[in-house]
Amino acid sequence: MHKTKEIFINGFALFSMFFGAGNLILPPFLGKNAGSLWFWVTIGFFITAVFIPMIGILAHAKLQGTMYDFGKKVSPTFSLIYCFVVYTICIALPAPRTASVTHEMAIAPYFSNSSSLVTSTIYFGLVFLFTMNRSKVLNLLGKFLTPLIIFILLAIIFVGFFTAPDMITPTTLKAPFVDGLLEGYQTFDAIASIVVGGVLVISMNFNTNTTFEEKKELITKAGFIAGIGLLIIYAGLIYNGVLFSSTFSESANRTEILNSLSNQTLGNIGSVFLSVLVALACFTTAVGIITGTADYFKGISNNSQKIFTVTAIISCLLGIAVGQFDVKYIINIALPALMFIYPITIVLIVLNVLPEKYTSTLVFKSVVAVTFLFSIPDFLGFIINPNYLVEIKNNIPFANQNLGWVLPAILSFVFSNLIKSKKQIPTE
Image (cartoon, rainbow, N blue to C red; front, side, top):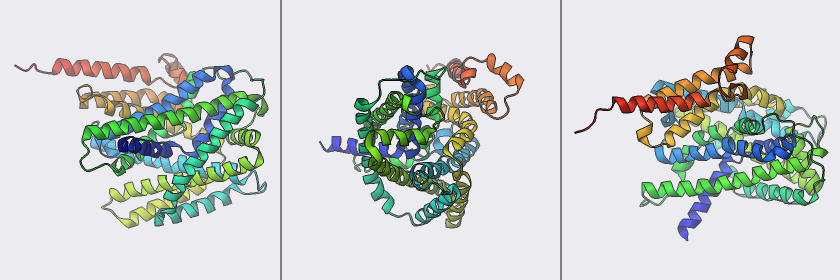
């Protein structure tokens, strides 16, 4: 009984970690555009927003280390650069996006003349204070916040099933599965699984006599519970986006769709309550990202408190600068960065969770190098997209769906394992 309770506690902790308020705005938007093909969109979204992040947690359970350990088999230099890039992306995109979501959901609907720059300045001023003081208030908020948001979302989903209009608009997506897959990148959850997963795994209250295998089993089952919870919420919100698609304006953005959905199902009071809770959840996410980033740079600088403070200041100033833009703009500028870092993150997660006999140093180096090489056209396609790049992408399988790295990565994994097996000297 005690073990079951521990599994559920850790499962809810994992759910809370991945359940960023920014993620809430993505599923209903997908549903609005998916129409009757919503199931394929959900499967695609589930792979990158739930399945891969859960595998990331399993990889942490296996490694029992930090994010640095994910890439050290490629090379120590690569791992350091990778960590730097990931943390930089975190403070430049998902952290500022929390301020933008807060402004669009909790401020702008009620204060029509409000300035997003003022909102992001006050927001990150408070984030800096909480980061420097590491207040326990955030932990208390987190314990009550997540259950409240889940309750409200389940209420929206449940009421929506019975009150939605009969008309469903046709799909506007050309490749629903791929669109769901790529929208899942915007949750940043695969990156989150390696950024804070190690901290979470280490901080779990395991008994001192718990064996490695028992810990692994606990994390696996907790991950399964968190994954099921995320899938229910995501699928429900996507489906509600489908059911209410005819009520949204064609130009409605992600936050407007979520606001409209909560207003149509729970009324004005429910919508206001959701806005406040989302703002608080965004705030705790921003503090977590910036604290984690500052901790990392402090750790590689001989535990210098000065470096921690400087990193927190730079992160908050960057948050003010980027957070004043609307959510749609931040999502658009995030795409090139995600096309660059997400494929590498996915292959590192998968390689670290596979058995050791299939993941030698040679395998790590070749798969990561090939993934990096074949993700360059996707990355450049969102920045310059010259004619010759179109020609290149036409000759790479799935490249026109921004998944040109997938098949080369798989082939590289197979061939490097074959080379490794041929090089091995038989034991007598």
